[in-house]
Length: 226
Image (cartoon, rainbow, N blue to C red; front, side, top):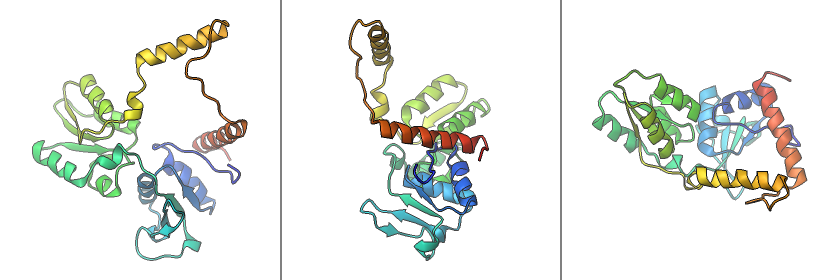
């Protein structure tokens, strides 16, 4: 934030990164290595100028060839999404063998090798649109969180929608309608002075300011503002 940085989503990461590169400003990308590497490839970046930052702070890379870190376009943190790193190239091969004519759709937090083998790669919204736009009778194998895929299969029963591999997010599964209703009820009761908040969270004021600034920067870039 102190360097006018921004947050991003899986759908707008290319737009955000491109803005900084167009301004001749190298990018430290910390949301996850796979998304960063796939973003660099989507933008057509010189991969000899894209480096991975290991968790001990050392560099590895570049992603292709040899290059000088002093001329780097991107430094990508070695983070990952546990859900999406479970998908392998063998899963795509198995889907194509068992589902003739299948369309393989994966999230860009999957390994770049997997993205290269898929028919479509995109954010959760893009995956939803790919499924919704497919003709009746289509077969679609999806590489993202399995509960989402199963929900899409129920929403579009006139086509075959299956997880590329069953990969659930335990953290997302902790949020259910009952817990949400309890939290909302506790907020309403607390505002009436009738009880404490359920599961209260406290965030440092400095972090709030930094988060707000990085969010505003993302919105400005997406809207095309300076």
